[in-house]
Image 1 (spheres, helix red, strand yellow):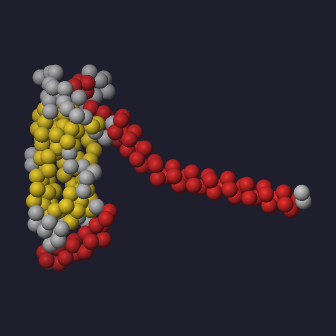
Image 2: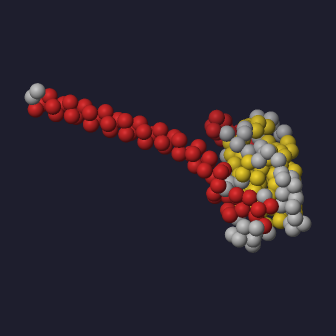
Image 3: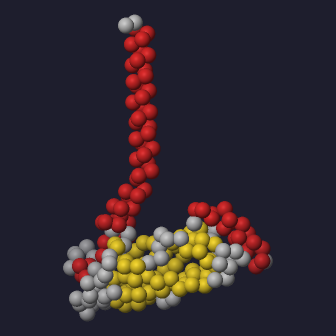
Length: 197
């Protein structure tokens, strides 16, 4: 076999290996977001609350204040707020709270909420049972809805040396336009601004 043929074969193997490496890196890039979200949900890292089927029930009379924060991305023509600013709960006690959202635009708009808790170290102990986060919510023009969130604070928060100083937890939601409607939301937002001026 000639030197030229050996080089072509070697170059072909190298090109195939590089193409495989690039494909693996692209696949890893796409998988990194869901894997990171899974890691955060399991560990509570970054203030990510846990998910649970039911609360264990209160094991102590101590109370923790839960503050409710509501934010809306400027591209979404919604009014979004918590029904109450804060409540005091006993760890282990199942609690139901509400947020309110209203579409201020002239057309139906779909939004999606993301959430976290602060302080971040409390994320591992804040468990949601039911919430409106990460699911698309479509509101017609002018429609107002109550959005429930059911949660509890794990009683273990009281015995963890790192969280013994936590007496207030903030649950924060931010609504964004859904990716599928981002372009149409910009049009609705412009129309809404025009009507207000």
